[in-house]
Image: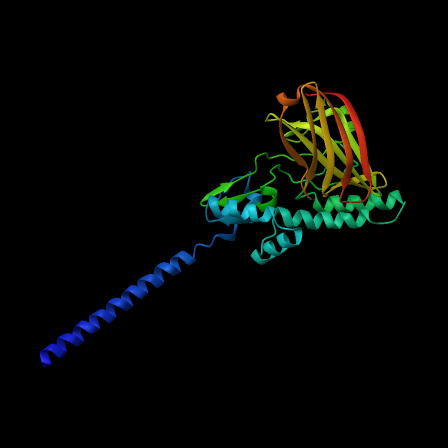
Length: 322
């Protein structure tokens, strides 16, 4: 009996030790997994070798995503957030990247544009001071000098949301940069026509058709709707833009849009209400060009912008696809 009791005690002790060992191992594994967060704030110097071309960027913060799936899901969620929700997200991360810095700069510029003043010298002085302040991190229009919108030094819609001020993120162990390492200036039709011979950055993806634009005005705001196409595709599209004016100067602003659009040709008749969400500029119609043809008429009714109550209506004839 004593031997059996002793054996039983030894067996129980072994089981306890085994359980404790398993628990410790599980805790270690869990702890190791927790040390790899889905998203964290890092610095550029951890992911790029120092060279003369990037030495000035080494201390810049950059978001590090665990993998491609986390990056894509974060991007999807942010695109569906309001501006306040995005601010809260980045503040909780402790990250001041492209989105936050641009919003802060844009709000500062908005204060100048909201001034009720006809003193052009005062406004010019304030704008010059503003541009000097932000010239190190943003680019300003070198073609249309009255456009004082702060532009990113790169062109990439996704990385203007999640990237740092130079358009970089880290996914897994790889540093990813923007699609284009140059700014994309917003050029009005008149400026584009008069400066067409000069090589300038252009808006990738959309091409507007000649004489296919409608503009409405709401106080200081001017909103334009242009019928066109996707450059690297086979679909019609509509571009929406809104500018805010202060005397001679202007800046791009965000807005939401709606309109009733009719497109007619010898082989097609299309009529539908189009909506462009706040902050978006190009709406792809998913309408193949060959279904309509290379020459068509269009009618725009009740074109509205979220910046005011003005409505626009206009008919267009013999629009040619280019």
